[in-house]
Length: 58
Image: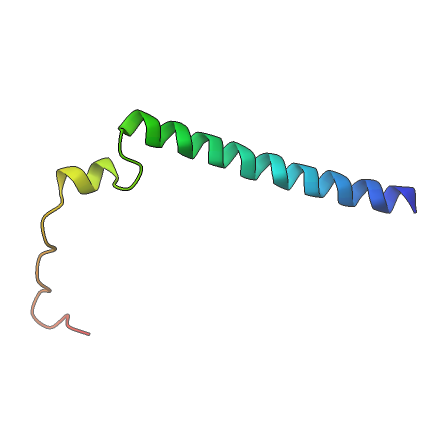
């Protein structure tokens, strides 16, 4: 019984650490960019998308 609880606790702790690390890295990227909403690609290439080529309309 103790091993089952240990495995569950380790799995939850690992998941929490991974989510925490991802959020921390996301915050660092947003801080370094100075704008957490838009990516650098969108800032440089923010114009409207080009129209579809003929025959590719869905």
